[in-house]
Image (cartoon, rainbow, N blue to C red; front, side):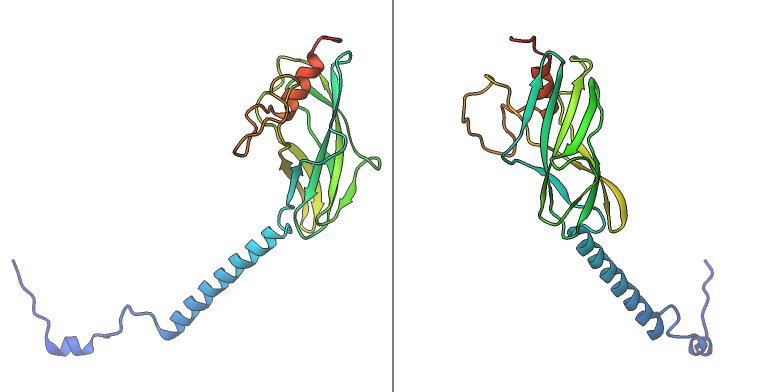
Length: 201
């Protein structure tokens, strides 16, 4: 194998700092990393206060809950939506149709939508549904879409109502541990089952 010897003069001519980052380059890299960290932190703050995407959730509240009409195979459901963000939003529409369910009404207690929902406020929306196919209604959790207009434009935010119990399926005042009621059904499943029950059953 051939061996090559580099003369001392050649070594002296080589740049010992070759491949190293210059001070100017290091400063630019540090500034870039700082900018990325600042932008990420600002994004988290904007997200947490509901500017990027409005922060809405369905809550349990007293008042109107549901009305069942087995003769027409329909039901009305009151969902309470809270604005957990720190900016006001305009609620433009609530609800959607699903398998076996036709949306017939969606309004707040003061009339029709749109309406403004301020930080910390709760609005009650009454949804009306007609059951078109009792066997097609999903038994899975089904979030309710809320279409709102916030500071950065229009968004659709899904809120998940609490589960409901069917009459007679669980002892009264049954307590449980964890996040989900073991006797609870998804809201549309519980209400559709009652709407599909034979009248006077």
